[in-house]
Amino acid sequence: GLAAPAREERGPLPRILVVDDDEKNLLVMRAVLETLDQEIVSVDSGREALKALLDHDDFAVIIMDVQMPEMDGYETAAQIKRRPRNRD
Image (cartoon, rainbow, N blue to C red; front, side, top):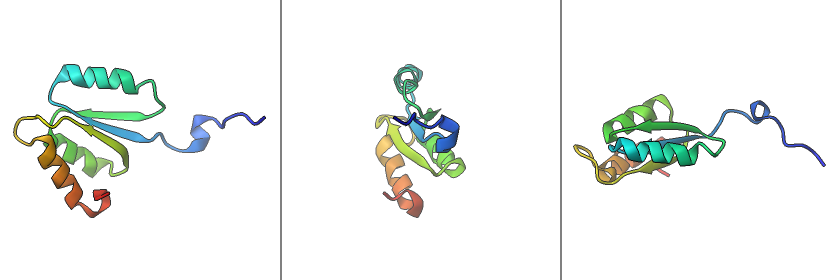
C-alpha cells in the first residue's frame, strides 16, 4: 500500500481557534487538541478572537466559551458571522 504523505507535502496545518477567559480551560483544551494534527491558536476574550480572525481568516473550527466578560461568546459569534468570509 501507499504510505501517507509527509505533513509538509499536505500543506499547512488546519487552524483551531480556542476562546475562553479561564486559563485552566484553555490549558485543558490545548492538551486535548494537541493530540490532533492541527495548529491551535488560543485567546482569552471575544475581542482577541476578532483580532485573531484579522490575522488568520482560515480557521477550520472555532471553540468558544459563551460566558466571558465584556463580549460574551454569543456576541462574539454574531460579530464573526457579520464578516462575509466567516459567515458559514
